Amino acid sequence: MYPELFRIGTFPINTYGVFLALAFLCAILITVRLAARDGLPREKIYDLSLWMLLAALIGSKILMFFVEPEYRENPLQLLSLDFLRSGGVFYGGLLGAILAGYFLMRRYNLPWWKTADACAPGIAIGNFFGRQGCFAAGCCWGKPTSLPWGVQFSELGHQITGVPTGVHLHPTQFYESFAMLTVFFLLLWLHQRRKFDGQVILLYALLYSVIRFAVEFVRGDPRGDILGLSSLSGLSTSQIISMVVGICALVLLITRWRKSKSSTIAGTGGRVASNAAHA
Image 1: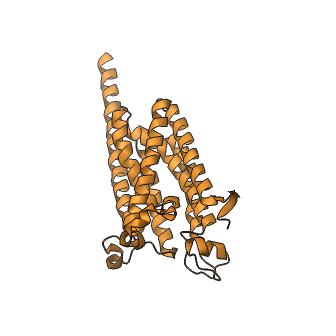
Image 2: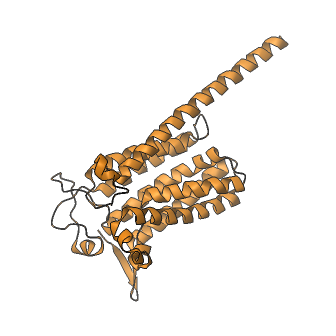
């Protein structure tokens, strides 16, 4: 675990920040390439990606404010260096990017589902790099475990994030990171073979929600509670959001698949009728 790569004078270059930059850079480059393959204009996709990146950063901070008691109880902490340097809450960033993307795609006259499909693999590879950064920083740690792949963090990590030391923990960051790397390759494969627009982004949303829901069971770091829902349900805030996102994604996947299938059948029937008339 290396939370700090090096220093430029007294200014630290944090490993998490480097991985986060890699996540954003790879996500944008992959999105632009896939969008161009689909015939979407590169310039508009670059602009869209940058604005969605900004919205993701803001959204992640907003949700972090609501779920972390220390920020709710002391709003001045929002101006602290620790708050600005933190990664925020992923689901807040995802929702922020979706909202910004919806309005910007309308402004740029970009098709929603086709553009979102181009974004999906980039988001997945961003998840991979982001969680690698979490491991390097020592945040988002797991519960104690006796499994042979349990990891032990350093005293420096404890000073920065409060991660427990002297005990082996589930490497939850790696669980999610490598699961999303697998999802990334699956989505790349699917992008060229999708049966309908929206299939790639909706599958991403479904798979991520399932993976995140499962990983949360072995997460050991404090993550706050929105409106006491976690206390009432016994699930974490992220698990509750995962359930909502996963159910919505599944319903939309089924709906759009049926609509696509019906359109295909109708088109085939029309061609058969036309051929019969010409015969």
